[in-house]
Length: 380
Image 1 (cartoon, one colour):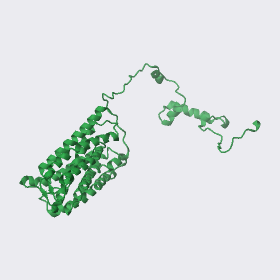
Image 2: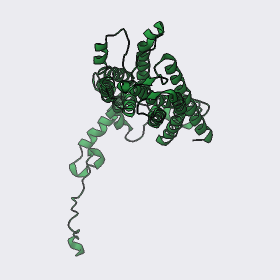
Image 3: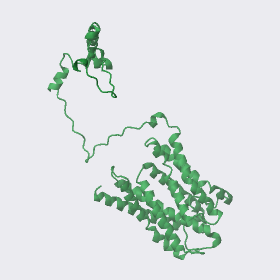
């Protein structure tokens, strides 16, 4: 790969990851999803843990977005090493959210916790995990589709959760990652649904992406199409921790099962309703002509050439042509009659005068490779 292509890939992945990370943080600050300027008591430690999960997830999705943007600068011959370089650049771009989270965390007061250090560590760990997310995004199309679909659904849940507070102007309650925390939903229903929301969403996204991708990709690629997006939720909750109460513990265990649910959905899409025609590998289509790959030159027909005249000249064909045409069923009636006449002549010969070409059987002396060859009696 040329140096210019490497530079474009690295610059695009880094810039897109930094832009998406900063944009997500700004949107979260504006909507009240992240609020570091408040006092968090020991009894409300789950609110702080929920924000740590958001920060880690923002870093990973920003790196994945950098991989999506850098995909346009990959050449068809790019291998795993090239994608890894692009993933590292995207991870470094996602790491720009570290100071953007540590600075607001200086005003947070969390009992028994160094808020600045903890929030920075979560952002760094999320950026490191985002390297592999960007590497996967630079690979197959199904992986990118799953990440984009699940990220859109998570943001939709967050917007629905904070919508009532935006209308009333009050301070929104704690918004957890991948959970519907809307005030218009009963608290008991929200608590029960927090254990099933992320697995169900991962299952639906994996099934939908698998159904779209199974006509274009192999069975193994389709079966793993539902892993990438839920894996980011799992890693975000692993970085943040299970919390100290039931409010964060239920989403934590739901996130641990989200990756398996996503794979289950894509596996179902890969194996259910797949007929024999879809299992056969399709022939790759020829690439259209481009300035780098011009079309092959074509020679005009020359009816006056010696080869064309010999092909159209009437007369006996090559030896064996009639037999081959008779076998394939493409010979004319005179050719078949000639083959039948030769066979009739060969059938009238005695056995000792038959040639191998008449019968198609060639006799060979027996071979015994374990005993030395014996000399004829007249040579002894």
